Length: 359
Image (spheres, rainbow, N blue to C red):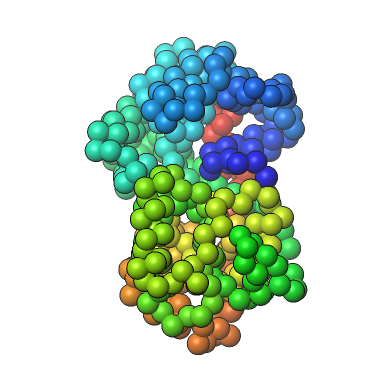
């Protein structure tokens, strides 16, 4: 599995389905030093003229220019922009009689990894994009609360989807990850980027406060070495070095699916990102999920998952699930049914009729 972010994974699923439905689809792509194919599963691929820089600050500037470049290529009937960095430039397709749509994702301005200036700038770009675009796409209906009322008539719902596979089943036998061997049903699991808004400090403190002897396996790369260093020190401070395992990022789909299939239960700490694909995927695997209590996660999980507000409530929920596993095991099946009915790609493609030029 390629090392993609949420938007890239989303478009890799959505674009071929749009092409199969008869739309002429072109995706804007980053140029690489390797192969740059011109098509992918019926989708045409267009490339930004320059290679992305390695430097973080230059990378952010690059992403703004990248978005503006493709929004201004107005030889399309509909321009669908993922993210708000193009800002005011979503107005230009509209001036030429085209449809411009911005997918605003989640509360990106609330991410603490950004400086106050960056948060202000992102919030400003949100406002510019919402005012400039013909339509505002949201993947979570909870995002309507962050869009001015006067713009609500422009909102369209663009749900994330998941491809349903067979229900999860334990693979059998121990297996090794990050130098540790694990038993099926023998560990708690988290899969997420290591950043503050995914509530890792809360998760580690809650887990450490519980009486659980099952290890906590954390899969994901840090977005900041300073933040990861703080988490590592916290693990030492709480004396859970032998119980908390950081694996780093795992991008082999078979290895990641085995970790998810064989976990005892899953902890989901995302709090600002709208609908999160990793939550959809683990729910589709019929697992018990403990999620941060916020409107985005409640919209997805409803009453099929459990929620925690802080470290203390997480510790209590961990212990409750371990004591009474059979009482909660049916939640996994209910979560899978919810995903099947509300987030399976085959059921939600009708939501994307707004991408047709005559819609």
